[in-house]
Length: 252
Image 1 (cartoon, rainbow, N blue to C red):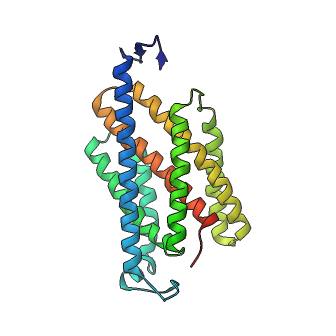
Image 2: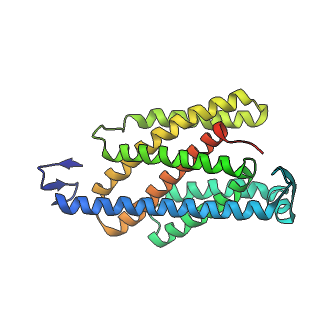
Image 3: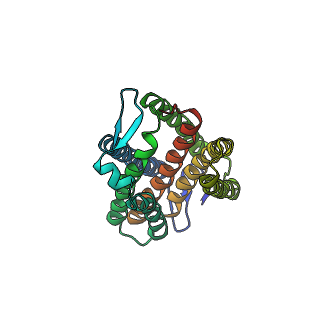
């Protein structure tokens, strides 16, 4: 995308009035954030409901047993479906977003957010409600600040992409290793690095979503891009929240 004078924006296919472009861009970004926020709300609702229906706690708030639903979802082989289904959906949506109908992509996104809530119930039950709420607001403030910076900065953040991707791969590998060794020190390091990576990805993805708008001005493509952008920002928020929860959450 290249910018001409203050009144005209040139895209790869045509030029439009700057004021019209700005109005459209703001509407597109608002659409992205609305999708993301709705997905987070759906995940939160499912996580809270499933946690209440699946786990029994004592007066101190400590987990003492599964309910029948909890045993089915998390104490049987079905737990692997609960854990892996969201991963499969996010890869499917990321790979097929450009050919799916907007309505189909939107449905897959809602399904993914709901399944994330089911699997997220296991994480939430490990921490006190007060610390979960506190970390959520810390995450929301950090995310908002970095997304705003990514949207407004004139600096090209594309150079951060490969660095952040390598950091993400490193986090995934280290997390898999730590499943087997259970090191608290390694988990602390993963969480610290994870916060830095997902803070950077929030700004990076926001700028990419903004740039994509100028390259695809037709309504159908923009609709799919809004869902794709919402998915990326949703993942940034969720993973940032998890990393901060590991650092600052109070375990039951």
